[in-house]
Length: 69
Length: 159
Image 1 (cartoon, rainbow over the protein chains, first blue to last red):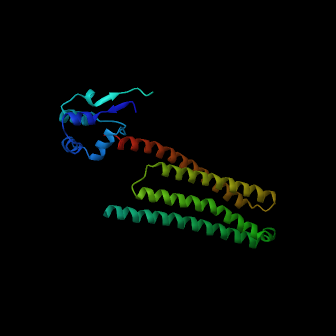
Image 2: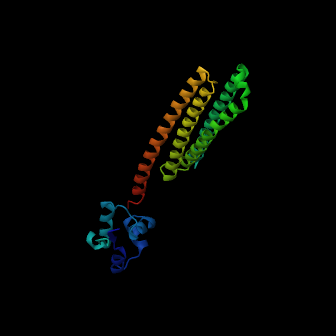
Image 3: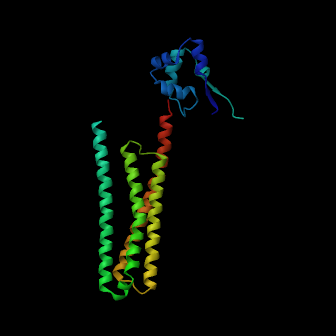
């Protein structure tokens, strides 16, 4: 999929675990895994907003477009 | 949990009623065949063929009822919009059209043999129309279920 979700990078920078992120954002671990592993088909703006709020970052820090070869 | 138990019971009732309805129709056809055989000497000579023809007509019907039971079971389990259900519905449509073709072929065959009764022709036409209706309905539903499955998958993978 062309859109890559770089949650791992931001989590490492903020020294936060996936569990902590899921609790603060209000997403289940399953949904967070779907997002992290690139299986998500869509992300709600409300979810993106909460993630950026918790990780104190911009959407561009988490989402990256990589053209398929 | 209580709701699920009620749904399961309703599901089994639905399957049971459909199977019973098919069995009644089958018995009714057998009775008609018996009457035809007893009332016509020519047909009486071919009694075995008549019964075989009716039993043959029951096969696609039984398969379709089995597939319908599978669909109802899946719906009862909360898996209404799946590709499996769409496949079963396409199977039901195929059985319905097969049944129509079988009845039509039988009607033509019996007419050529000179053993046709006007009432049987009408019955055959009615069954063919009904079968075509069921087939078209099942195909349409299969298409809708495929679309619903796509929407459900997209919804499940929306974070």
